[in-house]
Image (cartoon, rainbow, N blue to C red; front, side, top):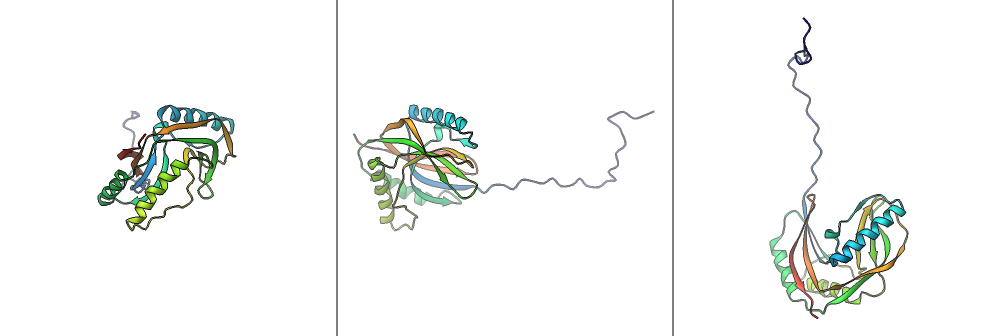
Length: 207
């Protein structure tokens, strides 16, 4: 009698199964930076505008969701674990920063290259945004006054990333500029490798 499909003869000779190859785990690192967040309505409008541009130019890559959009100010650094002492110092700096609220404006798309195969599509505005630049310089100066050896850029171009891609998009003006009232800034903790982002603290700007 022939065996059924479930009891057919197996010729494994007691040999152990071949080991499965495991994908290498991405190292988990912690990033800290100050940032400004767009108002929800403008973030949603930015996402919709960028989606249409991506389709029109047949760009590849992943769109940044509205809840993740931000304007990076001062990058503090990358760490293997969250440095509580540095977080404490950054909170003191944030609490001692006193500036008036202002309006931010972004009126065109640019592509920032990160090597040969990686780029970011961002919205920016070279002219204007003086108050945003002032906030950047106030925070970076306070960090330098503490004696921290950080790579603080003297030339700061305010921008908000919209698409991470390997494609290149030409400079494209926005028909209706993105603009909102900046009433606060935040300290962001990003866990690279896990896709986690949280706000460790936030500070209001004064009217």
